[in-house]
Length: 84
Length: 285
Image 1 (cartoon, chains in turn cyan, purple):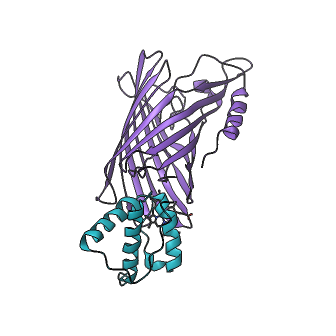
Image 2: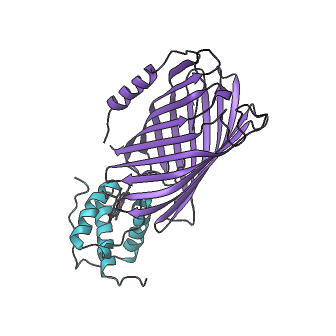
Image 3: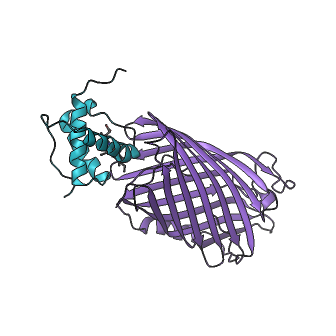
């Protein structure tokens, strides 16, 4: 099925500036539609990947969009938490 | 929301309610979508492209009085709606099944007569186009147009939908102008409405908020005949493949512009009821 694209693990090539821009837009346009943004750093990697599989279907992501967003969230995971 | 005039077919009692109960049980239970935190107020987010959901609506409007000839008044409206995200910005809704059941006691007769009536309502089409996505702008803005026809009556209902999320909080406001053509399209009634809601995500899939609805009737465009204000809690629960929302809104203020036909100076019971209760449940297809 379209949305069961494999999980992304650490060690992926970083997103290019163009990919990053597309991923940020996709996140806003699709994921923010139904709820507040969720931060991958608040979830264990497996747990996040599980949600991504469910949410990818809810957001009707194409396989390429799913892969891009998974890479984007993985990259976010490596970034420091925002200062609260 | 669209309402139609009473049919003259007046039959004694609870047949309508029995049919209604049977229909609720038998109606096909489908298997979401962008959930709604309120039941009268729409939020600006439209559905994701390609998503389809089926919504079941149940609305109860209850409580008039003997001055308007309707004791023990209850009106049930049922609606089954199919919604589809045509694009990320445009959602189309089709009301597949709509009917109402109304019952009351007429105090003018001796002894008082039980009156109940049951009416299929026509088909209706709902269009929502998101002009500004709240996720990308300071405020979300969506244009809404609903139209319906039932053979003897028709209506057109444009709305402007505003709203935004702020962390766990979300608000929305709707401005509505509804035109109804009644009595074989010979009579026209305008209804000016404003609704708004504020809700907080409580975690654990629950949201709790407050919803407000102001309804002002404007028959023949010749000045307002009544105004009413309803306020009450709105509770929403959502899971991956379904969501449900309930509001209970008592009328807190009402006014009749021409005399006091309902013998009540605090509320309007001629065109409105004491309480509105609406429940919507939706399933992803």
